[in-house]
Structures are given as structure tokens and as C-alpha cells.
Length: 316
Image (cartoon, rainbow, N blue to C red):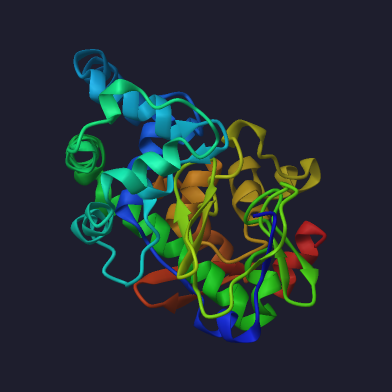
């Protein structure tokens, strides 16, 4: 899976998509201490205890999590690649339910790992769907409007990068091991596997609010790259602006300006800086009035970006 052969026809039909089921699985990884981001600390503290209690009470759920969410690997049947743009949990779950128990078990044992007895029943998929629904309804659904806005804002920003610099620019920094290697070859991870030809397949890119991403596929039809949403790649405590710029503008305003090397929404800026929407919005207004940033509407999102004057000030 290390390199995908991606022709012009595949790129032309590629798209960004939102998957509530993918976000649900990302939440389960975060609950296990994998892919946790500082901005989600309060949310984790609110939901981890109930999740852990559910695993203690339900042997099936505990076995499924242990078998399907391993380091650097997620069972594909849990995150069946989206093949439409519905962006709903029910739509995602319908694709999961189309998987047979034997197909799911084949994935779980593909690397020679023994399958727990709890996962050998004919109700494997139904019980997996019930567990995912439990996590979705308790931990994600109440916060989904905000989360969806962040994911949509990332797609808007990536789409702008695509329009101005092509796919190489749009995928820049998406995943640590992913890069274009020329001649239609996309390296998706560092594994040393034979190249996989995606001719005739649907290629999708799905943002997540997790710090980690992964690859999921349903060959030869669908291939998906799950990647961390823009603005959630850095720990807010480690994001700093140049000292001289801080003295000139103040630390928060300098930080906001420094983060606009690519267009971002106010929500994305909140995520990467750790400051509230009111604080970020106030500093954006000052920077806008000073001619250091501009804004434009893209669908339902408003993107802010540095002007040439702002670039000069930050030394970009």
C-alpha cells in the first residue's frame, strides 16, 4: 500500500468528503489515548469514563476495539470508504452493514492475529453497528454542528489550495509519510509494498479532528486517505510567533497573523491557537483594518488570509 498509481482520470474524479463514521472511530482512538489533541481535553474528560465503563461491561465491545483498532491500523469494515456525498452517520452505517461477518473476520485475521471468541458470532456486524451508534449518539452527535463546521472549513481551505496550486499543493502536509513522487505516483505511507494501481477507482480525502490519520480502502472500487484537519496539527502551547512581531503587534495578534500562511476560518484559528472565537475575531478585525489580512467567502465559510503587506511583516 506504500505507493498508489494515480492517473489523471482518478485525480479528476477525486474529492474531499466528510464521514461521521470515520469521526466516530477517531473518537474511539482518542478515548484509548491515541490521537488525542490538547484542544479536545475537556471533551475527552467528559466522555472517556462512560466509554471505559461500557468496555468493562460489554466483552464484545472490548474484544472488537482490541482487534480492530491497533497501532497504525484500523479495520477497513469499521470505516468503509464513503461512495457518496450524504455525509450522514446513517449513510455511513449502511455501508458498514453491507459487510458480511465473514468479510469482517477476514480483515481482522489478515495479519495472522487470532480472533477473539466474542467476535465469531453471526451478529458481529449488528453488534459492531450498535457499539458505534452508542459512541456517536453520546459523544459526537451533541457536538456535531461545531465539528462539521471545522471539517467543512478544512475542505474549503484545501479546495482553495487545489484551485491555486494543483493536487500537489492541496495535499501538502496532509500526512507525514504522504508525498508525490512523480509520474502519477502518490506515496501514502512508508510501508514497502508493491505499487497499487487505482485506475477506475474512486479516491477520497476525509478530514478528521484526530491528530492521527489512516488509509482505508475497498479495492478495487474505493480508496480513502483520512488526515488530520488543518489547525489541529500543532499543540497550541508550541505555536509561537517571531519575538519582534510580538513586540510590534502583541503576542496574540502576532500569533494569529503568523498562522495565516494558508487561508483559515476563525474556527480553525481557534483550534490552532487555543484562543476563543471572540478573542480571535477581535484580532482579525484589527488586522483587517490594518490591511494585513483579507477575507473571502467560500460557501458557508469565511476564510482569512494574509495580504502582501502581511507577508512582508511576517518575513514570508
